[in-house]
Image (tube, rainbow, N blue to C red; front, side, top):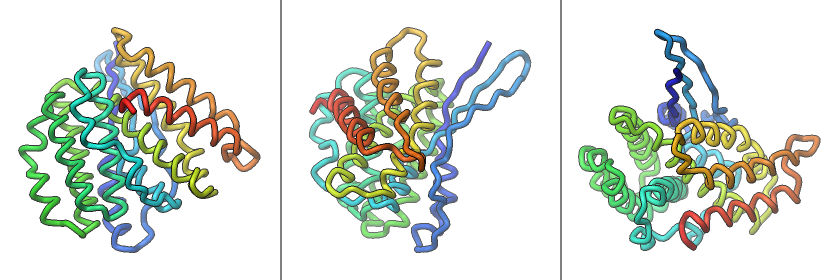
Length: 273
């Protein structure tokens, strides 16, 4: 028998950003690679997937040249369109990525707006206790303009969410939420790159194959009822694009273009735009 879990590396984010936001280059430019570790314990094999958090990916992409474009994020006004648990989980991830994007670009009021949106969605997917117990809105409003503090607040939220999901037997929800966050971050990255081609940003995009492979694996393992078969198929189609590397292990121009097209199409299915 196998026990399978997914963990978002929010603790790594917290420690990595202690000095990075203060101006020192301490955050590694390498994506934290998703890993599998089997631990035998009384005939139970546990596989832990460790993935970078939305905040960490946003920070890596920002340092690679991910500039802020305010009208490409998912509008908080769309929240009432998400009435199924499937849509709510994926869009919780989307809004988490949008909030990270705003925080990394010093958009404090937008960050607060997205937090309010996440709070509403959390009630729909049974995570109300997280927002209420942390006083996040007050903390964000008290730290408007302070990127360091906003960064810590989101990292704290990520850790609290991980613990809540694990403690309430909802660990499988984490992989769906992260899939939504990853798709949104790739959407932001490919859009910015279309406006101004950036070799460093393309390098960050090229590295995402490893993360995507782990996302697909974690969803498959937790999808006994085949609720996410279509999502898995869409993600596998995107994963096929990463076969088009050049001699420097960078995605080719054609592959980057195809990645943008497929990410936009999948993102549109998720957010309804």
